[in-house]
Image (cartoon, rainbow, N blue to C red):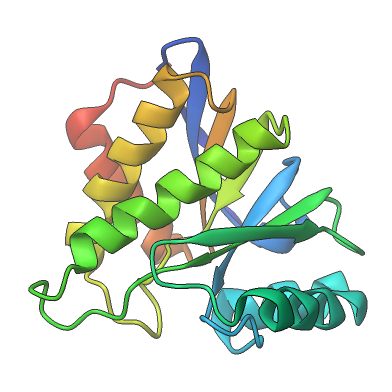
Length: 187
């Protein structure tokens, strides 16, 4: 059973935290925690690739053929294919190496790049996973405040109307919610 979503009013928009499966989240775009080659993988990346269907790997290969790779901190966009969301934004977060290799700047840039793609493609609502917090090992206690700050900034700048953090497990949802409540006021 999933936890009830929690919403925070930020400027004219909403920052939400929800628990569940991002592949079926009701947003115009979902963010994929991708690798630099957009090759699919485990966790969120594998789930999004599986749910979107066979057209997604082909679209990703075409992007990589054109640009070579997606650097940490950057994002690219594809159609949503079989997802309910119309778009998938593939964001590459940094691999955690202790925080001295530019990881904080790269993680903030990954979120920011996604929000800028939303504005460019007139996407009003977007759902994010916890970029870099899974296999890439970024500590949630350090990643969550940075991610929430970037989402708040994007909402204040009207890059989107709704930005959601969608956490798969109840434990992850509770951890992110606790960190959010330390700095945000629920609406």
